[in-house]
Length: 418
Ligand code: SAH
Image (cartoon, rainbow, N blue to C red; front, side, top):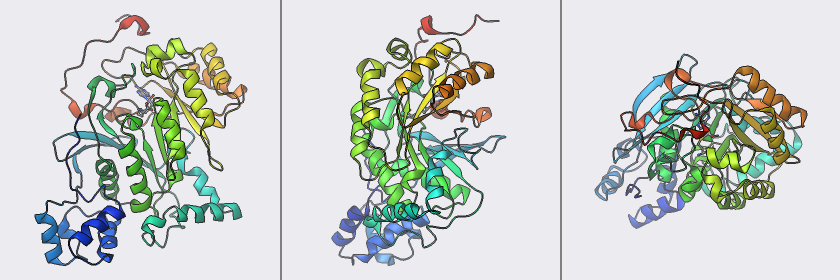
């Protein structure tokens, strides 16, 4: 798997841009001008960086430096306001990025609850402390935060769902992206570029606009760990999205869960649980062979949570497969005593997916078992189903891709045709 060779500014941190500036014999303050232009104004060409002298811009261009902005190739708008973007990169590869406007109360699970804690903090003394700590962690790019960082518009609270890889290698049996296999990792710049492209298209700008970010699009972020972490850092320090408004979801790459806990700047953690015992989880998510539930739960329990932070467990409900009350009881046992909540997602169907969506009653019954066991559980509302933007549906990138071998039918709960 090769990564696109790039000398794009997007993806470079303040230090790297400073090196570039100094090597060119320009004064150090140009670095801030570039960072500002690329991450805050979200320019798309060197030409647009009007704070730089023309000769310097030309010199950069001659050295093969570009902004590295992504191209919006296609845009599909759902009746519910969700927008699915097909976003293309220099080498012709593309991924999907989803815009979900105005959360739905958060807990219904579009991921926008990621920012809810931060919402409260401004109101209390401890919150003020949390905010100043947040500001400390921005020290690397100090001065870049917008002066209105601590105010917000009323209303809007939108979520961007971004991809971390072209395709995915994890092969979860209910996920459409899995059918593509993995083409390549995205660079940190390409991960950030998705956000910049969508912010620009939607004409919004954090922190004035409340934007939540979820690493829940195509790919397994923890199998592209370095680039994911760097992107998260750039999104905080450069673009101005608060750490607490970001959530990364993993299929359960245990060593990287442990690494994430050590990061100074990191999103919140979500784990795709999706089954209540090893036998079932291994069938649905082959990754469970390598990192079993015991290993996964141990890493989750050890994860160093911050004040008012919790771990989110996602559970895709597959009719007749993992959605029985018994499964809910087992899941509750696994999660007992953890500072966590569960987001239940009824399967979003798609071609090549041999499972069925459970009835609303079954979903509610599952939720109730968890709740009676004292575990906060929420049902995620599917967003943008009509445009194939919902969870696990992102694979249109290679619309004509030949699907791989039909999947093993043995665990399929699909009823016979007709
Ligand atoms: N690889 C990461 C992030 C991408 S998947 C992970 O596995 O967590 C994001 C979420 O979508 C996961 O919780 C996954 O279980 C869920 N998902 C995948 N396919 C789905 C489908 N067909 N219907 C509903 N949710 C799905």
